[in-house]
Structure formats: structure tokens, C-alpha cells
Image (cartoon, rainbow, N blue to C red; front, side, top):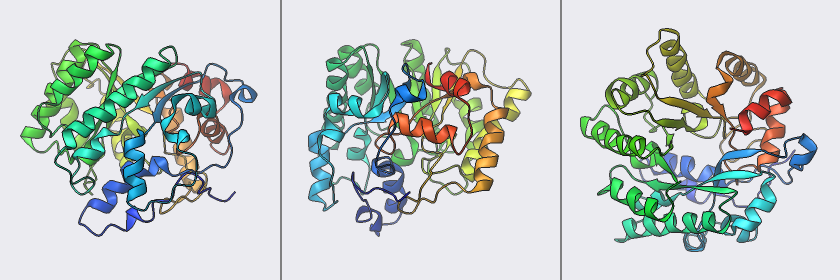
Length: 344
């Protein structure tokens, strides 16, 4: 199958020459590269109640910024910006809709002086989408941990929708848990989220070449320790989107080792979302899974308690139904196991 470029090609943006910008743009924008020309209907998969925990939408303003940069976008804008259109495409009964407002506070991505205001406006867009279809859409608002008063932004959004979640992108924020100030900022936000019973989705990989086991240990021992019970979701099996990577192995092995030894902080609910780790076709600079990758990913799927795995498509990378099909073939995850992933 050929890779579809109907949605958008980001080769223009990925040619950025500023130090560190290329990799950050890749991890932020690769979910907007379409890999599938069509998706099977979810009813044909027997998954009428599918819940997709990792779906993105863009405000018309953000989409226009990328158009102004010369990014070729050939699919209708509504596939990014209109929640009714998105829901009709996905094949999911319900979704968690995730803001990418941190684009506006990331150095090298947006240079305007109004980055904080733009982040808030992008969150407001996601909140409006949820308000339009509250029975099907739960909003996850974005923060940049290194911006001024991230807790204040969460509280502002919670006044609009108390049932929201929070998205933190360590790669975009350049969050390094080796830095005491960064650990303090993350701990402050997670403490507030725990007290408000707010789930947090963490894109954990910060793009450091040495990211892995040590970062997971710092998260558990220096950030989560003694906090109230928290639902913490680690995106992309604990690493970056794009494929099953050595960083995934580092984080998963660290988790499994700590779990075996009973060293996971008590009370917290760890969930690993399965989004953007199973590429079936080549997409820009991201290769498809090799047969060895498929075997290894299946081994981990069997080793990890299914209760901590949740389904996400990373739309518009894939629709919900298409990604479900990929997990069944070639990965070979059976329908009963997939039901466990998708109905939490």
C-alpha cells in the first residue's frame, strides 16, 4: 500500500535547520501525516463501542498558520477542524480530543509574542469541540510546563469543563527530569491534577538521546512519590510517536522491572497508550515495522498486563478503525484483546 499524502506532507517543515527544531517538529507534527487512504468501518470489526484515547484536532487559526508556512494541505480543512466531520471519519464511538496548543510556546515553532494567549485559544477550541458533542468527546487541554503558571491555565479550562484531561509534551517543552526545577514543575501540576481527579497524558520522551530508564526512575522516585492517587497515561508506549523504538524498550523494561519488585508508587494508575507505535507503511522519515519489530511488540503486548494498555489512533495519523485493523493484522492482536484496549 502506498502512503497517502491526502492530508498533508510535512517535508517542508522537517527541513528546518535550527538545532533541535527538526526533531521537535517531527514528534509534534507526525500525527498529521496521513498513512491510510481509507479506513474500514468499525462495525465490520465488531467494535461498535470503540473508545479512542488519542485524537487530535486543529483550530482553523493553527491550520492557517501551517498553510502560511507553505505546508501543502490537500484534504479538506474540516478533516482537521470540524468535530462532526472528524467523528464521522474515525469509526469510534467516543474519543479523548487532545489540544496541540503547546505549539505556540515552543521556541522555533512560533515566534509571536502572544504564544501564551494562542495556547489558551487552542485549548478553548478543543473545549468548544467537546461542548458540541459532550456525550462523545472528552477534551484534553495542553500546557507547557515551562511557561508561566501552567496550573492557572488548567484551572481556567476546568472552570469551563470540569471533566477535562491535561496533555503535557516533554519533547516540545524540553522537559528534563534531571533538572530539579523541571521536576518541581511537573510535580506541582501532577499534584493539582491528582487532587482534582484529572487524568494526565504525558508524552514522556524529551528527545534527549539518553532518554529512558533513568527518566522513568526520576518520574517515580522524585515526582510521583507521596502524591495523591493519579491517573497517568504515557503516550506511545512511553516514548515518542513514530514507531516502536529503543526508547519504548527502555521505559517498558523499567516499568516491568519496577512492577515485579513492587516498586511502583502506591495508588497511582499507570496507563500506556498504544498510539503511533505500529506503522504499516513508510511515512516521511518514519519506516514501517519490520518483522522483528512485530515479533518484539507482540512479546511486550503479552508481557504487559492488558489492564494498563489503552487504545489510541493518533488521528489524523490513522483513523480509529484503520489502526484497530493494523493491530489485528499484521500484529495479530485478537479481537477480544483489542476490545479490552478500546473500551476503557
